[in-house]
Length: 201
Image 1 (cartoon, rainbow, N blue to C red):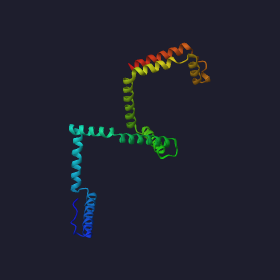
Image 2: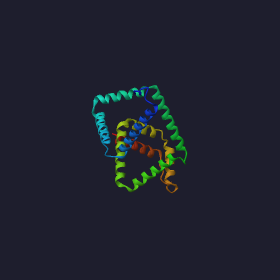
Image 3: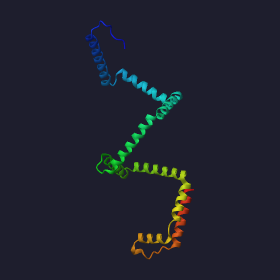
């Protein structure tokens, strides 16, 4: 910025500066107070054009990716992000353990609100069920071999006698006449494995 000549009094410099600040503040207030201000329309057009270019211009996209990689590669940025994540994680864990914390109350309120919505809104319930079915199908398609091995390994570890006793206990004392022996348990286990394998296939 060019300074005033030496012979211009400082009071004049200050008056000019004060006047410039006043004009700038008045202009900013005018822009902020008028939705139809030309500058607002200009900024909106520039922003919209930039959004389109960022989405469609390969050169600009490449520059943006390069800039992002350069920023993330900086040690200071990595240190900051690591510290930010650790601090956030610790804060979440601390608030989750505190029944009176605002975060926990908000989460509980959100869950309760979602449960009420699912109970009273059939359309929302149908969308959630459709989403869960789609996710389950994708998981089965992606991890079907792992699922098969998990089910087989789990059933192989079952003890027939102990399983029969547990099932009998769950059925209740009034149904003790229902004796599930090892052969039946083995048959049920085989049927379960076969059914899961067929479902996955």
